[in-house]
Image 1 (cartoon, one colour):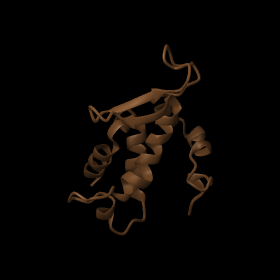
Image 2 (cartoon, one colour; image 1 turned 90 degrees about the vertical axis):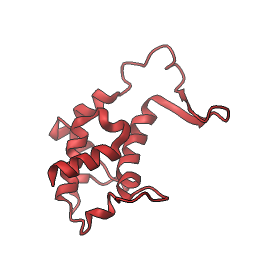
Image 3 (cartoon, helix red, strand yellow; image 1 turned 90 degrees about the horizontal axis):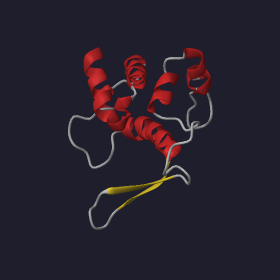
Image 4 (cartoon, helix red, strand yellow; image 1 turned 120 degrees about the vertical axis):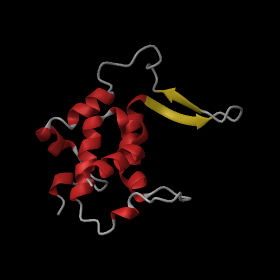
Length: 130
């Protein structure tokens, strides 16, 4: 069950694959969660909309990581590809205080810092949830 759950989380995580500590943390959260039917988190058939795990867990995490470096993303009408625009002043180099994948990954290796930093949508601390 652990390996299948890890692979399901890893498969849904897309660009978050560069943060293995995060993937392990999310796998542990899924395995210990009180979800009655984990099939609803990772549907096996293609759906027209995102699965709840992707929409409510992974996408908000990716948005935080994305927003650290990029101002916006648009779709090029000619090529259909993403065109990302960096924050002002980031074109030549990223400032030293801009978090990257390694910085986010390290957060999940530092338990006291993680407990203080991990908030849910309403601003409450993740580890204080019932």
